[in-house]
Image (cartoon, rainbow, N blue to C red; front, side, top):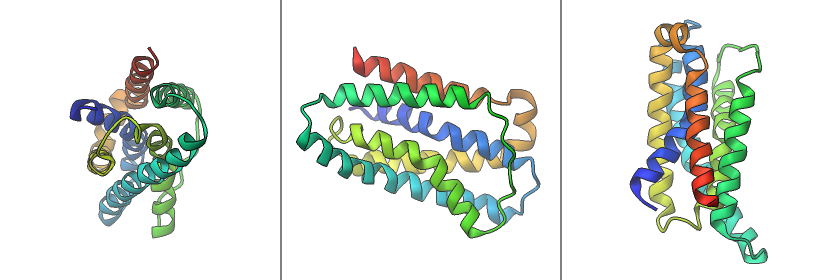
Length: 176
């Protein structure tokens, strides 16, 4: 798998963190939380795909399923989930402590666990993939928080929609 494809996957995985960070950026959080959010999201986006990779190895040792099809189906399901989440109007609570920031980072990183299940069989260097996911998601989170006040007024949920479309096309690519 090429670095370009890994980066596209990382961008798709980072869009939910970016979208939520945009919104949180409009809530006048303390600046120390901007950095903590980005760091924790990056850490979780590093470890979750690796955990998914190990779980995937166990699954594929028992089931004779093509990893490409599994990855494709996971990408498509995640993209549909992201598109459906655009319709939800959830109340945001301000991230006020380390626990709430860890919970935020965990929830926006669950999709990288799923990707790790299928991705481990598609790339030779899972550590490199996890590093790319981590750096990309941390950067997107930081940019989202910093640009939240400006961009959320103009673009709203478009960032999540773009991430959904990227994952959908990647899913279709792997299935066919």
